[in-house]
Amino acid sequence: QVTLKESGPVLVKPTETLTLTCTVSGFSLSNGRTGVSWIRQPPGKALEWLAQILSNDEKSYSTSLKSRLTISKDTSKSQVILIMTNMDPVDTATYYCARDEAYGDSNWFDPWGQGTLVTVSS
Amino acid sequence: SYVLTQPPSVSVAPGQTAKITCGGNRVGRKSVHWYQQKPGQAPVLVVFDDSDRPSGIPARFSGSNSGNTATLTISSVEAGDEADYYCQVWDSSSDHVIFGGGTKLAVL
Image (cartoon, rainbow over all chains, first blue to last red; front, side):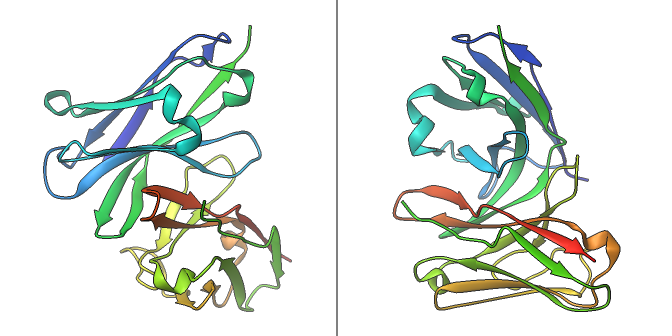
């Protein structure tokens, strides 16, 4: 059974750096074209993709947030880490990680973690 | 950058067929994936690669994609299908994942 679980702070202050961890089980972070993506969803709003890391360590980032994001993985711990700098109240959202099935010019997310709500407030 | 456009809402009576569209420039040349998100829950993949269903997804969910429009069709709609639905593609020109703005399906 494939599962993903997000962990990290529930509250961060403006200008602080957010570090989120996605712990996966049931699949390897080092095989095939499977990877992990981070996606967020502000309250009442649509999904927004943030970053992707594949098994070969290829990384892709949202253009609008690229300067603030770093994605990495620790294969030995089955973890994917997302770092977002200079947090702002508009970054308040539920942050999801999801298994990323990438094939050629196609990729989809299945399954998703339960999500973690991060609030940015002083 | 590439944009996917979905209607904000679609309403349908139980037992009828719901069609949710996802518009984009030549989206028929891309693989489109669909997610269902119920309130307070994480999204669930219901259709991938335009028309394939993951295991466990009822055959009532189907997809098509041609020209500038991809469509998620839900036949014999049930009250439990009430949710937000999102389409998604990979834009190879920007190495970016693109989501549509989401459609709220209301079962009357």
